[in-house]
Image (cartoon, rainbow, N blue to C red; front, side, top):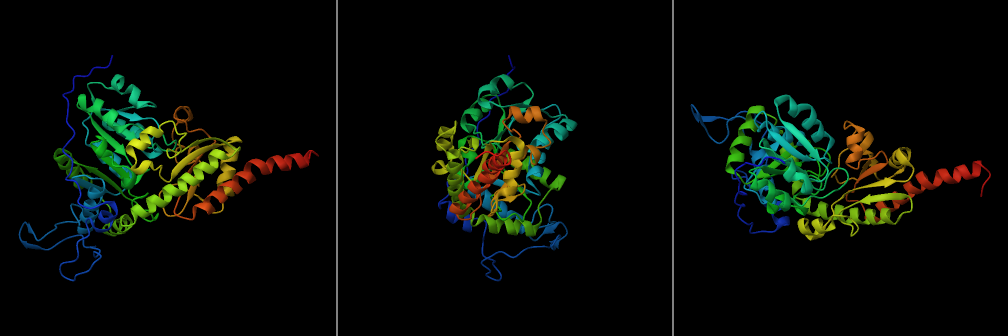
Length: 415
Protein backbone atom coordinates (compact mmCIF):
# COMPACT_ATOMS: atom_id res chain seq x y z
CA UNK A 1 0.00 0.00 0.00
CA UNK A 2 1.14 3.52 -0.74
CA UNK A 3 1.93 5.77 2.22
CA UNK A 4 -0.29 8.83 2.56
CA UNK A 5 0.65 11.07 5.48
CA UNK A 6 0.44 14.44 3.71
CA UNK A 7 -1.56 17.17 5.38
CA UNK A 8 -4.70 17.91 3.36
CA UNK A 9 -4.74 21.13 1.32
CA UNK A 10 -7.66 23.21 0.25
CA UNK A 11 -8.20 24.55 -3.22
CA UNK A 12 -7.31 28.27 -3.11
CA UNK A 13 -10.29 30.64 -3.25
CA UNK A 14 -11.46 31.32 -6.78
CA UNK A 15 -10.87 34.65 -8.41
CA UNK A 16 -13.93 36.93 -8.30
CA UNK A 17 -16.55 35.97 -10.86
CA UNK A 18 -16.18 38.09 -13.99
CA UNK A 19 -18.91 40.60 -14.68
CA UNK A 20 -18.67 39.99 -18.42
CA UNK A 21 -18.81 36.90 -20.59
CA UNK A 22 -15.91 35.22 -22.37
CA UNK A 23 -16.01 37.08 -25.68
CA UNK A 24 -16.11 40.47 -23.97
CA UNK A 25 -13.23 39.50 -21.67
CA UNK A 26 -11.21 38.17 -24.62
CA UNK A 27 -11.43 41.54 -26.34
CA UNK A 28 -11.05 43.85 -23.34
CA UNK A 29 -9.24 42.12 -20.43
CA UNK A 30 -5.73 43.48 -20.01
CA UNK A 31 -6.33 46.05 -22.76
CA UNK A 32 -6.37 49.53 -21.19
CA UNK A 33 -6.38 52.55 -23.46
CA UNK A 34 -3.04 54.35 -23.50
CA UNK A 35 -3.37 57.17 -20.94
CA UNK A 36 -1.08 59.53 -22.90
CA UNK A 37 -2.08 59.01 -26.53
CA UNK A 38 -5.49 57.42 -26.13
CA UNK A 39 -4.39 54.50 -28.33
CA UNK A 40 -7.05 51.79 -28.29
CA UNK A 41 -4.47 49.08 -29.04
CA UNK A 42 -1.49 49.03 -26.70
CA UNK A 43 1.92 50.04 -28.09
CA UNK A 44 4.78 47.54 -28.14
CA UNK A 45 7.20 48.36 -25.34
CA UNK A 46 10.57 47.18 -26.66
CA UNK A 47 12.75 48.95 -24.11
CA UNK A 48 14.82 46.58 -21.99
CA UNK A 49 15.39 49.14 -19.22
CA UNK A 50 13.29 51.89 -17.67
CA UNK A 51 14.12 55.30 -16.17
CA UNK A 52 13.99 55.80 -12.41
CA UNK A 53 12.87 58.94 -10.59
CA UNK A 54 15.59 58.47 -7.94
CA UNK A 55 18.10 55.79 -6.98
CA UNK A 56 16.21 52.55 -6.47
CA UNK A 57 12.83 54.13 -7.32
CA UNK A 58 11.54 52.88 -10.70
CA UNK A 59 8.74 54.96 -12.24
CA UNK A 60 6.80 51.86 -13.28
CA UNK A 61 9.14 49.15 -14.51
CA UNK A 62 12.80 48.36 -13.91
CA UNK A 63 14.12 45.70 -16.30
CA UNK A 64 12.19 43.82 -18.96
CA UNK A 65 13.12 40.32 -17.74
CA UNK A 66 11.43 41.11 -14.43
CA UNK A 67 8.35 42.81 -15.88
CA UNK A 68 7.16 44.43 -19.10
CA UNK A 69 3.90 46.25 -19.93
CA UNK A 70 3.04 43.91 -22.81
CA UNK A 71 3.70 40.79 -20.77
CA UNK A 72 1.67 42.04 -17.81
CA UNK A 73 -1.29 42.94 -20.02
CA UNK A 74 -1.20 39.51 -21.66
CA UNK A 75 -1.00 37.82 -18.26
CA UNK A 76 -4.02 39.80 -17.02
CA UNK A 77 -5.95 38.67 -20.08
CA UNK A 78 -5.20 34.97 -19.53
CA UNK A 79 -5.98 35.23 -15.82
CA UNK A 80 -9.40 36.65 -16.69
CA UNK A 81 -10.14 33.96 -19.29
CA UNK A 82 -9.03 31.08 -17.04
CA UNK A 83 -10.94 32.62 -14.09
CA UNK A 84 -7.69 32.84 -12.17
CA UNK A 85 -6.21 35.38 -9.78
CA UNK A 86 -2.79 35.24 -11.44
CA UNK A 87 -1.09 34.26 -14.70
CA UNK A 88 2.58 34.18 -15.66
CA UNK A 89 3.93 33.98 -19.22
CA UNK A 90 7.03 32.07 -20.26
CA UNK A 91 9.11 31.74 -23.41
CA UNK A 92 7.45 28.44 -24.41
CA UNK A 93 5.10 25.78 -23.17
CA UNK A 94 8.13 23.63 -22.37
CA UNK A 95 9.65 26.49 -20.34
CA UNK A 96 6.39 26.69 -18.38
CA UNK A 97 6.58 22.97 -17.59
CA UNK A 98 10.26 23.24 -16.66
CA UNK A 99 9.68 26.18 -14.32
CA UNK A 100 6.88 24.39 -12.47
CA UNK A 101 9.04 21.28 -12.07
CA UNK A 102 11.96 23.45 -10.93
CA UNK A 103 9.74 24.70 -8.10
CA UNK A 104 9.83 21.21 -6.57
CA UNK A 105 12.54 20.20 -4.13
CA UNK A 106 15.02 17.45 -4.96
CA UNK A 107 13.55 14.09 -3.99
CA UNK A 108 10.01 15.07 -5.02
CA UNK A 109 7.74 12.62 -6.81
CA UNK A 110 5.25 13.44 -9.60
CA UNK A 111 2.41 11.28 -10.92
CA UNK A 112 1.56 11.94 -14.57
CA UNK A 113 -0.83 10.56 -17.15
CA UNK A 114 1.02 8.38 -19.68
CA UNK A 115 -0.42 10.01 -22.75
CA UNK A 116 1.35 13.38 -22.68
CA UNK A 117 2.97 15.70 -25.19
CA UNK A 118 6.33 14.31 -26.31
CA UNK A 119 8.20 17.36 -25.02
CA UNK A 120 6.64 16.96 -21.58
CA UNK A 121 7.60 13.28 -21.52
CA UNK A 122 11.14 14.22 -22.57
CA UNK A 123 11.47 16.77 -19.77
CA UNK A 124 10.01 14.42 -17.17
CA UNK A 125 12.28 11.50 -18.12
CA UNK A 126 15.50 13.20 -19.27
CA UNK A 127 15.73 16.47 -17.34
CA UNK A 128 13.64 16.38 -14.14
CA UNK A 129 15.48 13.28 -12.99
CA UNK A 130 18.77 15.20 -13.20
CA UNK A 131 17.64 17.51 -10.40
CA UNK A 132 16.17 14.74 -8.30
CA UNK A 133 12.50 14.75 -9.33
CA UNK A 134 11.03 11.34 -10.12
CA UNK A 135 7.97 10.89 -12.36
CA UNK A 136 5.62 7.89 -12.45
CA UNK A 137 3.37 7.51 -15.50
CA UNK A 138 -0.04 5.86 -15.46
CA UNK A 139 -2.57 5.23 -18.26
CA UNK A 140 -5.48 5.29 -15.78
CA UNK A 141 -4.81 8.03 -13.27
CA UNK A 142 -8.35 8.17 -11.88
CA UNK A 143 -8.09 4.50 -10.91
CA UNK A 144 -4.43 4.37 -9.88
CA UNK A 145 -3.79 7.68 -8.14
CA UNK A 146 -4.31 6.55 -4.54
CA UNK A 147 -1.94 3.61 -4.96
CA UNK A 148 0.73 5.72 -6.68
CA UNK A 149 0.86 8.52 -4.10
CA UNK A 150 3.83 8.30 -1.72
CA UNK A 151 5.14 10.56 1.05
CA UNK A 152 7.32 12.25 -1.60
CA UNK A 153 4.52 12.96 -4.09
CA UNK A 154 4.13 16.71 -4.58
CA UNK A 155 2.38 17.06 -7.92
CA UNK A 156 -0.18 15.36 -10.17
CA UNK A 157 0.18 16.19 -13.88
CA UNK A 158 -2.84 15.83 -16.18
CA UNK A 159 -3.43 16.45 -19.88
CA UNK A 160 -7.12 16.45 -20.70
CA UNK A 161 -7.72 15.88 -23.52
CA UNK A 162 -4.43 14.02 -23.82
CA UNK A 163 -2.02 14.33 -26.69
CA UNK A 164 -2.56 12.59 -29.09
CA UNK A 165 -5.26 10.03 -28.13
CA UNK A 166 -7.76 12.60 -26.79
CA UNK A 167 -8.35 10.71 -23.55
CA UNK A 168 -10.13 12.68 -20.82
CA UNK A 169 -9.58 12.86 -17.08
CA UNK A 170 -12.19 13.84 -14.51
CA UNK A 171 -10.29 16.75 -12.98
CA UNK A 172 -12.50 17.04 -9.91
CA UNK A 173 -12.19 13.35 -9.06
CA UNK A 174 -8.39 13.47 -9.23
CA UNK A 175 -8.13 16.82 -7.43
CA UNK A 176 -10.27 15.64 -4.51
CA UNK A 177 -7.99 12.66 -3.92
CA UNK A 178 -4.81 14.68 -4.43
CA UNK A 179 -5.89 17.48 -2.11
CA UNK A 180 -6.76 15.05 0.68
CA UNK A 181 -3.13 13.99 0.50
CA UNK A 182 -1.76 17.54 0.34
CA UNK A 183 -0.78 17.32 -3.33
CA UNK A 184 -1.25 19.96 -6.02
CA UNK A 185 -2.78 19.25 -9.43
CA UNK A 186 -1.56 20.74 -12.71
CA UNK A 187 -3.70 20.50 -15.86
CA UNK A 188 -2.35 21.08 -19.35
CA UNK A 189 -5.29 22.73 -21.13
CA UNK A 190 -3.53 23.34 -24.45
CA UNK A 191 -5.77 21.08 -26.55
CA UNK A 192 -8.98 22.90 -25.61
CA UNK A 193 -8.03 26.51 -24.71
CA UNK A 194 -9.67 28.57 -21.94
CA UNK A 195 -12.78 29.00 -24.08
CA UNK A 196 -13.79 25.34 -23.90
CA UNK A 197 -12.42 24.31 -20.48
CA UNK A 198 -11.38 26.07 -17.26
CA UNK A 199 -9.59 23.45 -15.09
CA UNK A 200 -9.37 25.72 -12.03
CA UNK A 201 -13.16 25.64 -11.88
CA UNK A 202 -12.93 21.85 -11.49
CA UNK A 203 -10.40 21.84 -8.66
CA UNK A 204 -7.01 22.11 -10.40
CA UNK A 205 -4.36 24.26 -8.71
CA UNK A 206 -2.45 25.32 -11.84
CA UNK A 207 -3.49 25.35 -15.49
CA UNK A 208 -0.84 25.52 -18.20
CA UNK A 209 -0.94 26.22 -21.92
CA UNK A 210 1.36 26.23 -24.84
CA UNK A 211 0.28 29.72 -25.98
CA UNK A 212 1.84 28.81 -29.33
CA UNK A 213 -1.28 26.80 -30.07
CA UNK A 214 -4.92 27.97 -29.69
CA UNK A 215 -4.36 31.05 -27.54
CA UNK A 216 -2.14 32.76 -30.10
CA UNK A 217 -3.77 30.82 -32.91
CA UNK A 218 -1.72 32.02 -35.88
CA UNK A 219 1.40 29.80 -35.80
CA UNK A 220 3.75 32.76 -35.40
CA UNK A 221 4.49 32.93 -31.65
CA UNK A 222 6.39 30.60 -29.30
CA UNK A 223 5.14 31.04 -25.72
CA UNK A 224 3.68 29.37 -22.65
CA UNK A 225 1.55 30.48 -19.70
CA UNK A 226 0.47 29.23 -16.27
CA UNK A 227 -2.61 30.47 -14.37
CA UNK A 228 -3.54 29.84 -10.73
CA UNK A 229 -5.15 31.33 -7.62
CA UNK A 230 -2.60 30.65 -4.87
CA UNK A 231 -0.59 33.56 -3.45
CA UNK A 232 2.18 31.13 -2.45
CA UNK A 233 2.37 29.65 -5.94
CA UNK A 234 2.52 33.16 -7.37
CA UNK A 235 5.41 34.10 -5.11
CA UNK A 236 7.40 30.99 -6.00
CA UNK A 237 6.77 30.95 -9.77
CA UNK A 238 7.19 34.70 -10.13
CA UNK A 239 10.60 34.38 -8.47
CA UNK A 240 11.58 31.55 -10.83
CA UNK A 241 10.23 33.40 -13.87
CA UNK A 242 12.66 36.21 -13.13
CA UNK A 243 15.54 34.09 -11.81
CA UNK A 244 15.55 31.58 -14.67
CA UNK A 245 14.64 34.25 -17.21
CA UNK A 246 12.66 32.08 -19.62
CA UNK A 247 10.36 34.96 -20.55
CA UNK A 248 8.70 35.91 -23.85
CA UNK A 249 9.58 39.04 -25.80
CA UNK A 250 7.31 42.10 -25.69
CA UNK A 251 6.51 41.64 -29.38
CA UNK A 252 5.47 38.00 -28.87
CA UNK A 253 3.29 39.06 -25.92
CA UNK A 254 1.68 41.72 -28.09
CA UNK A 255 1.02 39.23 -30.90
CA UNK A 256 -0.38 36.60 -28.53
CA UNK A 257 -2.61 39.17 -26.86
CA UNK A 258 -3.96 40.12 -30.28
CA UNK A 259 -4.64 36.43 -30.94
CA UNK A 260 -6.55 36.11 -27.67
CA UNK A 261 -9.10 38.67 -28.85
CA UNK A 262 -10.51 36.22 -31.40
CA UNK A 263 -10.00 33.01 -29.38
CA UNK A 264 -13.71 32.39 -28.80
CA UNK A 265 -14.48 32.76 -32.50
CA UNK A 266 -11.66 30.47 -33.59
CA UNK A 267 -12.29 27.83 -30.91
CA UNK A 268 -15.96 27.58 -31.84
CA UNK A 269 -15.20 27.21 -35.55
CA UNK A 270 -12.40 24.70 -34.95
CA UNK A 271 -14.75 22.64 -32.76
CA UNK A 272 -17.45 22.69 -35.41
CA UNK A 273 -14.96 21.55 -38.02
CA UNK A 274 -13.49 18.94 -35.66
CA UNK A 275 -16.90 17.36 -35.18
CA UNK A 276 -17.62 17.32 -38.92
CA UNK A 277 -14.30 15.65 -39.72
CA UNK A 278 -14.63 13.17 -36.83
CA UNK A 279 -18.10 12.15 -37.98
CA UNK A 280 -16.86 11.63 -41.53
CA UNK A 281 -13.95 9.51 -40.30
CA UNK A 282 -16.19 7.46 -38.00
CA UNK A 283 -18.43 6.63 -40.98
CA UNK A 284 -15.50 5.63 -43.22
CA UNK A 285 -14.80 1.92 -43.79
CA UNK A 286 -11.12 2.83 -44.18
CA UNK A 287 -10.73 3.92 -40.56
CA UNK A 288 -10.04 1.59 -37.62
CA UNK A 289 -10.93 3.95 -34.77
CA UNK A 290 -11.56 7.68 -34.12
CA UNK A 291 -10.58 9.58 -30.98
CA UNK A 292 -12.69 12.71 -30.54
CA UNK A 293 -14.40 13.76 -27.28
CA UNK A 294 -17.20 15.50 -29.17
CA UNK A 295 -18.53 12.20 -30.50
CA UNK A 296 -21.25 10.33 -28.56
CA UNK A 297 -19.13 7.19 -29.03
CA UNK A 298 -16.14 8.60 -27.13
CA UNK A 299 -15.66 6.44 -24.02
CA UNK A 300 -15.42 9.51 -21.77
CA UNK A 301 -18.13 11.59 -23.40
CA UNK A 302 -19.79 12.14 -20.00
CA UNK A 303 -16.61 13.83 -18.77
CA UNK A 304 -16.64 16.11 -21.82
CA UNK A 305 -20.23 17.11 -21.08
CA UNK A 306 -19.22 17.83 -17.49
CA UNK A 307 -16.02 19.80 -18.13
CA UNK A 308 -16.27 21.31 -21.62
CA UNK A 309 -18.29 24.38 -22.55
CA UNK A 310 -21.50 23.13 -24.20
CA UNK A 311 -19.88 19.69 -24.47
CA UNK A 312 -17.64 20.89 -27.31
CA UNK A 313 -14.97 18.48 -28.49
CA UNK A 314 -12.42 21.03 -29.66
CA UNK A 315 -10.51 21.11 -32.92
CA UNK A 316 -8.13 18.20 -32.21
CA UNK A 317 -8.75 14.57 -33.12
CA UNK A 318 -6.84 11.44 -34.03
CA UNK A 319 -7.66 8.24 -35.87
CA UNK A 320 -6.13 4.92 -36.87
CA UNK A 321 -6.17 4.23 -40.59
CA UNK A 322 -6.33 0.81 -42.23
CA UNK A 323 -3.06 -0.11 -43.86
CA UNK A 324 -0.68 0.54 -40.97
CA UNK A 325 2.19 2.97 -40.75
CA UNK A 326 2.60 3.30 -44.51
CA UNK A 327 -1.05 4.22 -44.97
CA UNK A 328 -0.84 6.81 -42.18
CA UNK A 329 2.17 8.44 -43.78
CA UNK A 330 0.62 8.38 -47.27
CA UNK A 331 -2.58 9.94 -45.91
CA UNK A 332 -0.64 12.91 -44.55
CA UNK A 333 0.97 13.43 -47.95
CA UNK A 334 -2.30 13.01 -49.85
CA UNK A 335 -4.25 15.82 -48.19
CA UNK A 336 -4.57 19.06 -50.14
CA UNK A 337 -5.85 21.49 -47.49
CA UNK A 338 -4.36 19.92 -44.37
CA UNK A 339 -0.64 20.71 -44.14
CA UNK A 340 1.77 18.00 -43.02
CA UNK A 341 3.42 19.71 -40.06
CA UNK A 342 3.86 19.52 -36.30
CA UNK A 343 2.07 21.84 -33.85
CA UNK A 344 -1.64 22.61 -33.66
CA UNK A 345 -4.26 25.22 -32.85
CA UNK A 346 -3.62 27.64 -35.71
CA UNK A 347 -6.12 29.02 -38.17
CA UNK A 348 -4.79 26.53 -40.73
CA UNK A 349 -5.50 22.79 -40.54
CA UNK A 350 -2.57 20.47 -39.90
CA UNK A 351 -1.97 16.72 -39.98
CA UNK A 352 0.84 14.52 -38.66
CA UNK A 353 1.83 11.01 -37.55
CA UNK A 354 2.72 11.25 -33.83
CA UNK A 355 4.72 8.01 -33.64
CA UNK A 356 7.09 9.31 -36.31
CA UNK A 357 6.98 13.01 -35.44
CA UNK A 358 5.83 14.68 -32.19
CA UNK A 359 6.08 11.52 -30.05
CA UNK A 360 9.00 9.82 -31.78
CA UNK A 361 11.23 10.29 -28.72
CA UNK A 362 9.01 8.09 -26.54
CA UNK A 363 10.03 4.38 -26.58
CA UNK A 364 7.71 2.33 -28.79
CA UNK A 365 6.45 0.06 -26.00
CA UNK A 366 5.51 3.09 -23.89
CA UNK A 367 3.92 4.82 -26.90
CA UNK A 368 1.76 1.86 -27.75
CA UNK A 369 0.77 1.30 -24.12
CA UNK A 370 -0.65 4.84 -24.26
CA UNK A 371 -2.45 4.11 -27.54
CA UNK A 372 0.01 5.87 -29.85
CA UNK A 373 0.39 3.28 -32.60
CA UNK A 374 2.29 3.68 -35.86
CA UNK A 375 -0.97 3.97 -37.80
CA UNK A 376 -2.33 6.83 -35.68
CA UNK A 377 -2.88 10.14 -37.49
CA UNK A 378 -3.38 13.39 -35.54
CA UNK A 379 -5.43 16.22 -37.02
CA UNK A 380 -5.68 19.85 -35.98
CA UNK A 381 -8.74 21.43 -37.56
CA UNK A 382 -8.40 25.10 -38.40
CA UNK A 383 -11.07 27.60 -39.36
CA UNK A 384 -11.44 26.80 -43.06
CA UNK A 385 -14.84 25.75 -44.37
CA UNK A 386 -15.71 22.45 -42.73
CA UNK A 387 -17.22 21.00 -45.92
CA UNK A 388 -13.87 21.45 -47.65
CA UNK A 389 -12.00 19.78 -44.79
CA UNK A 390 -14.32 16.76 -44.88
CA UNK A 391 -13.90 16.46 -48.64
CA UNK A 392 -10.12 16.63 -48.27
CA UNK A 393 -10.08 13.85 -45.68
CA UNK A 394 -12.31 11.65 -47.82
CA UNK A 395 -10.27 12.07 -51.00
CA UNK A 396 -7.04 11.36 -49.11
CA UNK A 397 -8.47 8.15 -47.68
CA UNK A 398 -9.62 7.06 -51.13
CA UNK A 399 -6.13 7.62 -52.52
CA UNK A 400 -4.39 5.85 -49.67
CA UNK A 401 -6.66 2.88 -48.95
CA UNK A 402 -8.76 2.32 -52.08
CA UNK A 403 -6.25 3.49 -54.70
CA UNK A 404 -3.57 0.86 -53.94
CA UNK A 405 -6.19 -1.92 -53.93
CA UNK A 406 -7.43 -0.89 -57.37
CA UNK A 407 -3.87 -0.65 -58.68
CA UNK A 408 -3.06 -4.11 -57.35
CA UNK A 409 -6.25 -5.48 -58.81
CA UNK A 410 -5.44 -4.13 -62.29
CA UNK A 411 -1.86 -5.34 -62.02
CA UNK A 412 -3.05 -8.86 -61.21
CA UNK A 413 -5.67 -8.89 -63.97
CA UNK A 414 -8.63 -8.69 -61.57
CA UNK A 415 -11.71 -6.56 -62.08
